[in-house]
Every structure is written in structure tokens, then in C-alpha cells.
Length: 211
Image (tube, rainbow, N blue to C red; front, side, top):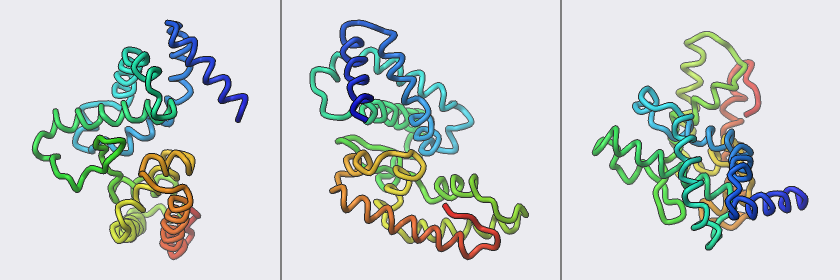
């Protein structure tokens, strides 16, 4: 990890001196994680109009333009800064395509002083069913999806968020805690609790697998 951190610092230093290839390499390392976040939080009504890859490309361009600003005041680790830029792109797309339909404060969480579309129960249930290896019949899947959505809806919003950040976006506990403004110990406890509840739902389904 220390070697990787040193390598990232070297790439950032080179990028700050105008080395475009260094920034491209840094961005490439995080592209997959950023894409998962965008797909998780991009409203289904917008997904048919905008592809996640377009959001990622726009984020890449903005990162290139704003890198000097980031390097002058590095309040966030580089990946979380990229994630913030991508999240703002998603917010802009929602407002452009959906307008007032999306302007509901309950649909967004606060992130570094700015909004972020929440990971809804529907989106999380879809992600969980994507890796579910139980019965393939449509009725069985529909019943399990309903049970998952009910379990997720019963959680506090921050518990759904910690599940989305840790399990699906694959942020570290430290990164997730920073995103949500929690102590690392509190973030870890919330994640374990949320994961345990979902495992209980899946365990109750015939042939269900662990989350």
C-alpha cells in the first residue's frame, strides 16, 4: 500500500507539471469504480438517454481542467475527488432531463457540501438480484425483490448508503466514513448491521446465496 501511495503521489506530481499521460493513467485506475457509482445512482428515466460512459468521459475532461485547483487544496483523496466530480455530473443530468420531477430533498444525500443522488432501495435490490444465484423463475425473483426492497426501506438512509458505498461501490471503510461524515468505527458497525439484515433475507430464500 505504501508503494502504491508513493506511485500515486508521483503520478499526481507529474500531472501537475502538465503530464497528460500521468493523469490519464490515474483516471484509468479509478474508471471502473466511478462507472459503478454512476450506474448505481443515475435515475432510470435518464439511463435510456445518457450512457454511464459519457458521464465518465465528461468527468475525465473536468478533472483535467480542475487538477491545478485540486492540487492547491487537497481536501480529499484523489479518488474521492474524482467521485465528487462524477456525482455532480449525475446531479446536473437529473436536473437537465427531469427538472422539478427530481427536485425532492429526500432523493439526495449530502456529500462534501454538495448533493448526491441516493442509492434507492430499488437500485440496491436490482444490484443484489444481479448476483443472486437462487431460483430463476420470474415469480420467485419478483418475490425476493419485494422482500429485499422492504428490508432496505426499513433501514435508515445512512445504512442504505453505507451498504451502497462499501458493498457495491467497493469503497474502503475509511473512504465510506469520510463520505458520510462518520467515525470509522461507526461506519463499520452500520455496514455489518445492514449486511446482516440482507443476508437474513437472502438466507430465507430457497437456494439463496450470501450477499
